[in-house]
Image 1 (spheres, rainbow, N blue to C red):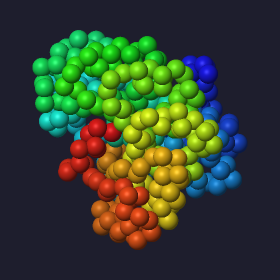
Image 2: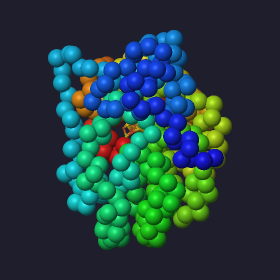
Image 3: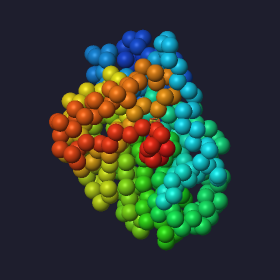
Image 4: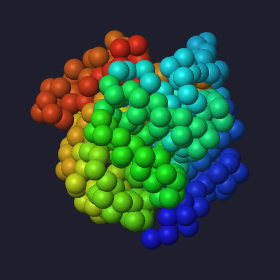
Length: 310
Ligand code: SF4
């Protein structure tokens, strides 16, 4: 499969999105519209409240609450551009500036990616990792690491694979879900060939996002640890029954629910907000519906490692 060709089948901009939707549903927001066709095809176009459509539709905030541009301010943990070292045993690399989809609630939508160009700083980052023997896990995030070509990924991973104290490499990705053909692009053979343990953390919020192509291709990742993180979003997955359906569907294809994040309070996501009290109640009700291993940990920014590592 030609990954680059597939990746070009992406809807960009309000006009193109509205044309495909057949009506003026989308507006210009603070985060440009970007929807892969694979994801778009899973939207129920007859339903204006479709949970997938909601995630990619900008909403002009007319409410009283106004969230911040950069609620996490990860820059404070970055001594080298492209690397964030916040927790002792693990460091995160901003592997890519780009995502295959634009989620309107994204906490990184205003992140200064230009400052964190990995390829201008790769040597320095690798030296840092070598000299910090307490780091045993490296997380490739972004953006989305799988928006990079295999060649670029190898440029990052190969030197990390040569550092003996690093045991695990973790990928945070939505690309493999929204463009499943990316799984079948020679990538898996390369990942199987390296020494490191591989953990892939998907980002799936609703069971409808798990399409038949992703289900068909997921077996190719069976040698790796597969986890999922979701963001709890009002109107998308704020019913315990929806989360139950998501957990069961994930489990059926070999992915364990890992984290359920409270929303980061980033501008343009105000309409997705769920209070901590309501989130705890939803989570508690989910615990009554599924076995413990199918209940993701409910986490929020201050006390949560993965928030920064998303
Ligand atoms: S970083 Fe994650 S949440 Fe943000 S746009 Fe990319 S896939 Fe969506």
